[in-house]
Length: 102
Image 1 (tube, rainbow, N blue to C red):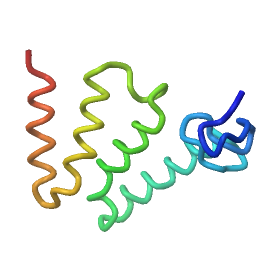
Image 2 (cartoon, rainbow, N blue to C red; image 1 turned 60 degrees about the vertical axis):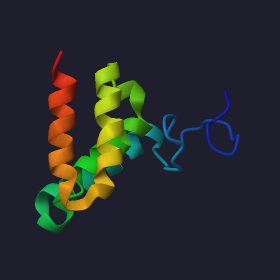
Image 3 (cartoon, rainbow, N blue to C red; image 1 turned 180 degrees about the horizontal axis):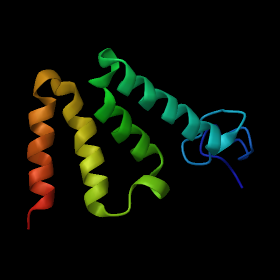
Image 4 (cartoon, helix red, strand yellow; image 1 turned 30 degrees about the vertical axis):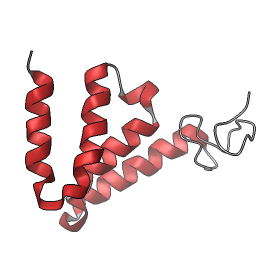
């Protein structure tokens, strides 16, 4: 089986979903994500990036974090809203309202 990065074979040293080179493969990728999220919750300076972190990781690991078209749209539009800076929170609220509607 070929990997998704540089046509290298998938191995234990690479995350199968995003192609990140980590000694523990997918488990190491999840561990790294968990560490970043813990940092965001423990240090307010990183907290403002939490939504972007989750949206980005979810888009890179769809088999685990995207169970529907709505989930895909929520993460994709969340990533697109992130560069809006101070308005990102209100943009994301409107997106959630739209996705949860009929």
